[in-house]
Length: 288
Image (cartoon, rainbow, N blue to C red; front, side, top):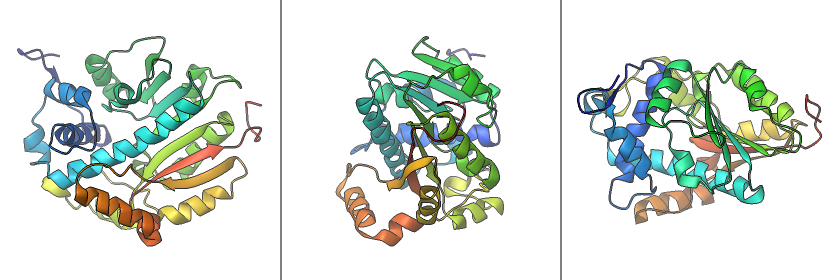
C-alpha cells in the first residue's frame, strides 16, 4: 500500500529482495557522473518505493554500481541485436523484478513478457503497470512451464529469453533443465543470462556478507563460464554458445578493465560472465 507521500511499500525477503538491491545500485549508477547506463526510469522507481535502501544495503560503493550498470549494458546490447535482427520479436524476461530494461531498449515493436514470482510481480505491476498487448507480466515461477503456454509463441515467432540475476539462485540441475526447455521450445531463438564464479557461490552458501554488510541469499549455481560455454556448445539444440562483454563505455578506468578482459582469456573464462545462446532451428522439441 502507498504511504502518505504516495510511495509503494514493500516487504520482500530472500531471493525476491535482491531486486531491490539491484535497483538501488543501478539507479545510483545511472544518477552518477560518467554513468555507463542511461536509466531515468530506475531513478524514478527507486524514489517511488518506501524502503530503507541505505539501512539495508549500505552506502552503495561506486565500483559496485559500475559493475551492475555494465552488466545491464551487456544485456541491453544483446537484446537490441536480437530486436534489430527480428523486428517485432518477443522478449521473455525470467525473474525480471524491478529491472527497467524495456524502457532502455524499446523500439516501439518488441513484445515484452515478464515472468516473476507473485509477490514480486505485485510490486512490479504497482510501480510499472502492464501495457498490453506489448508488455505483460505473468505471476509464476520461471521453472513452471505454465509461462510457456501463456506466451503462446508459434514456430514463426522469434523469442529471446533473458535471465539477468536469476539462474545463480537455482540448483544446478534446475538451471540446466530450464536452458534445455528453452532451447527445445524456441528453436531459432536465443537466451542470455549471467553467471557467478564458483568461489562467489561458495561464499554466499557460507552466508558471508557482501559489500555494505548485506548478506545475499545462497547462490548454489556457480560455474567456470568458459567451461560452461564449451559444454553447452556440444548440445545439439544449441547452435552457438559464447561469452559476451559490455560495450567499452564510461570512465577511462572502466574502459581499461573491459579492454583487458577482452584481451586476457583467463579473465573472461573464469570471472563473472554474461552468456548468450542461439538455439538451433529444427531441433527436436515441442515446436517444429
